[in-house]
Image (cartoon, rainbow, N blue to C red; front, side):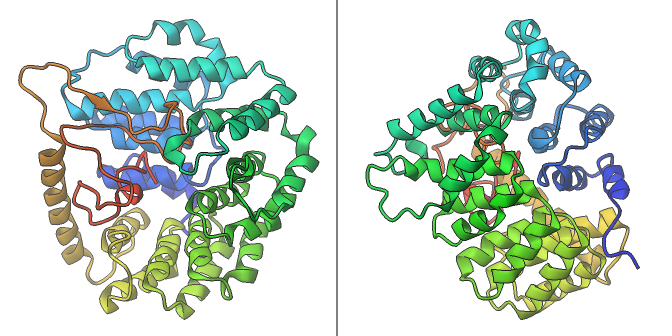
Length: 437
């Protein structure tokens, strides 16, 4: 008996008529940092099939997908469209395309440099970000490493991520990862350091950035060191540990995380649950299922349930159904009922409540869309440009799983405040991270 839905079936769901189903199918690949270059062409096919005007969430999910000459050419061609900038969906579609383009391999971007510079659909900040990446492509490893050290030294007194140009730092990380093998020993040595005092200490930023670097390099020997860092109660560091381990993405990671999961605190278990979610394997399903049976924390139960659904695990459907019926999960984290209905749809499986719950989900979506439109503002009849808030820190090109763009007619929302879209989640876990996450 199969444990999980075959990936070929998940690929087929990228072309599903329901946008939320397409979104989940794309996220399956992008959030696992796939190297499969056949995914983006399917995304393009879906956009062309169902229309580009409301496709910005789908495009946003593609930020971590590998690109090719053909997909980059397609995006640049799309950016030549006439767009009504007063229309939130159309403006966000353009910006999301630009973000996907900005995250592509700089060697590919270099070949299209002239066309990128001439593109009327790319904002000035995105062009600047892309040009920086192209320029960094010529940097040697020593230049990249010094730039990373300089960044950390320059910001050693800063405590919060919104105080620093973190996008620039991640650009350096991506450039350095190409030549990273030369610095394997240095990376491992830095990861092994235990930092007790961050006051005026460049390691405040070097620590999570080196974790991110090890992830970009998919550095196997770093696994136990990153797991040790994940035990530190710091959200930014923990996020980078989760993504780094997910990017390394093999069963060695699952084994190592599982070995300490049960005895770890809720902070560790929460982020570790994300690793089971993003690493797609039978072992991920097996361990997530086992830990769910013993877990008492509702929030972590929710994350483990998501891990089963995001692996499209057959026995995960009943496990999550039970969470919903027994109300032993945290709805503030996610609408687990919607997640289950989407998984059932993709897997072509049916629970007894499928039709009833799907109708309830559809009603909630409609209400959330109405609230979102009311909050963000509807397109103006005059067609005049509205302000665009790019929700970035410094450079437009942030770590790809964090950035998001919206057109806004209201004050900014704090990362930890309820999301204005009406989902009930924190903003950082909802619209701020939706490309995203």
